[in-house]
Image (cartoon, rainbow, N blue to C red; front, top):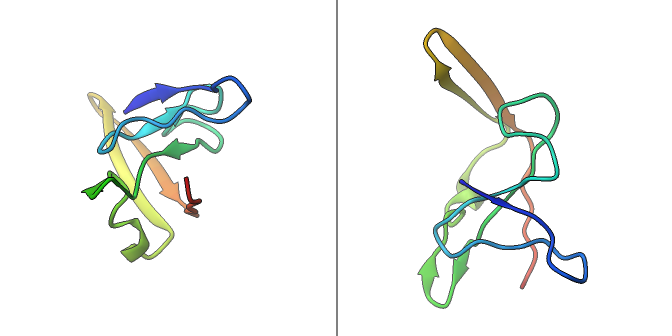
Length: 84
């Protein structure tokens, strides 16, 4: 996961195909609050990191091991896309 910010003109930076970006000016993924993740569905004939997101049933719950004996739960509640 790659931290992303804003470009000039206030649009969000978008990482390369296959990379997921985390909006670094918001909440940390897995932390308190809502975090924003950004990536491509597809770009120039290549499948992006979010290619299969349209086939997921939301919400999706995940549990990750962050440190020995520390499990962090997260839930994806919504997903949206916009043409580039």
